Image 1 (tube, rainbow, N blue to C red):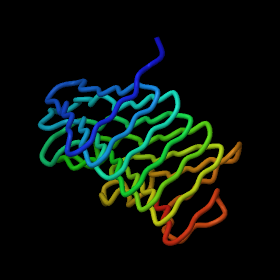
Image 2 (image 1 turned 180 degrees about the horizontal axis):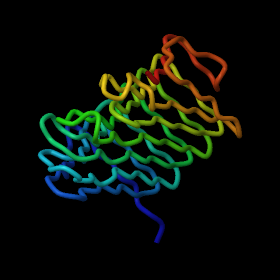
Image 3 (image 1 turned 180 degrees about the vertical axis):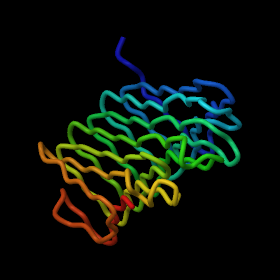
Length: 204
């Protein structure tokens, strides 16, 4: 049987925060839609060396996120490494949405932030949205046949002096076969797919 459609809306929530390794969320379907809901993976109170699981989205046709938040974070006071957010579909659209892997824990120079990676085989659209990885070695990478970004932010940042602010953080965009890398810059960006309004690529 073909995969069914999956819809989460009206403050729906999935929470797999863990104090040990693991805690993975995997969403699969023909079409997946998330509206005004929270999906949370990561580490709530982990110890040294703890590794969070991943937040995976696999849609055969379309993934839409309208409002709400996808997160895979290490919470304040915790230790361990954040997991990744990995979204793949033919068409991906974010509208007033946030996807975040952030390290908020107690050892910012030793533990790692996860990556945010989005791949659309056809079109990828961001409107008034934010994809971010905050912490050591965090990366944001998006790829699509066509990419349109409007009033949105792609951020991979670190502010800990111990490793040098943003030294190892990377934002990457790929449209067709060309990668555009931005290291330690924050600016209005145009010419990659379509960018309208204030579009920020920040790796610093």
